[in-house]
Image (cartoon, rainbow, N blue to C red; front, side):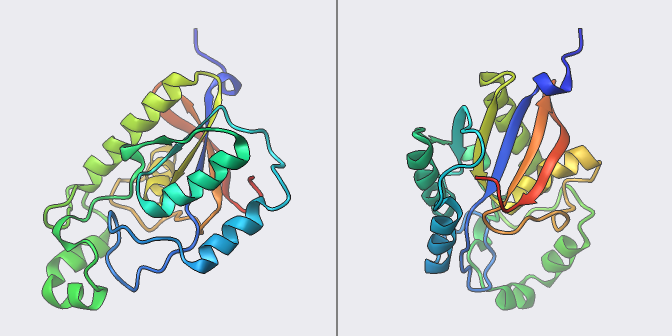
Length: 208
């Protein structure tokens, strides 16, 4: 018997707060939050939670996400669970390379990535967009299975959120620029029968 939508697991995907990548290729490049990012986070949670506390809190293991999760975990009285699958796409050997240098030295890669039509694209030594999507979906499936009919939060990255929305909206994995939410906003989706099914909110600034 098909489970009703409102019985599905609900997943709140929180993008980390503001960072400064210095115009560098930034997937696993581990930049911290800026002072403005920390201020943004303090402001967001300053008046206490207005929404129900989730059943569990997962986080990307990159610093910019873990720092947000640590604050949320304290505020919600939840111990965050590190999740490698919630990391941004891995850009391989070129992680942290300035974008102007990247365009000069790897013009073909730069052009192919901008076309956003090749799921098999990968930066040298990195993961393909198809691999990225599969990694994210497998991790979310395990998290949802641990909390059937519950509500969980995941502190993660724009690329991860875009992949989840891409599944719901029928986009290819390489279409990375669509629906990239602003820092410290939340996107809530339903998860049912091994896949994301519906979007409840996107880019919500009043999610805490």
